[in-house]
Image 1 (cartoon, rainbow, N blue to C red):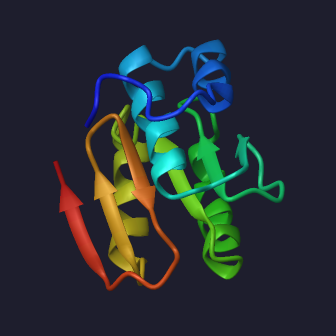
Image 2: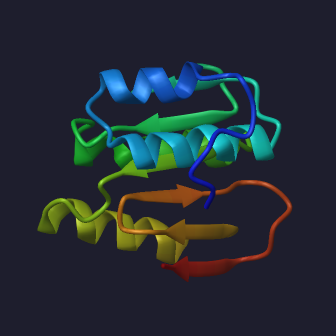
Length: 124
C-alpha cells in the first residue's frame, strides 16, 4: 500500500480520522476508494454508497444485517477492527465463511467485496 494519496480527494480520510481511525488505515481506505473509482461512502449506516464502513464502535450484533445489505446491493463492506474482541472476531470469521466473493482481512479492517470477483480469502 502506498504511503501517499493517489488523488486530491480526502473526504473519506478526514471522516475516518474524526472517527478515531489511525492515519495509515484511513489513507489506505482513501486510496482504495480512488483505485476502485468509488464516489461515495457511508460510516456506521447502510445509506446508499459505494462503500459501507462499520467503525469499531458499530455494534457487532448488527454486522450481519449490514453485510446482507452490502451483498444485496453489490456494495463493498469495510469492517474496522475485525478482531477487537472475541465476539467481533467470531462474527467476522462467520461473515467471511459465508461470503460468496473476495474478502481481505489485514487485521486493521476486513473488506467484503460484492462484485464480480471470485470467492477468495486473503488474510494479511
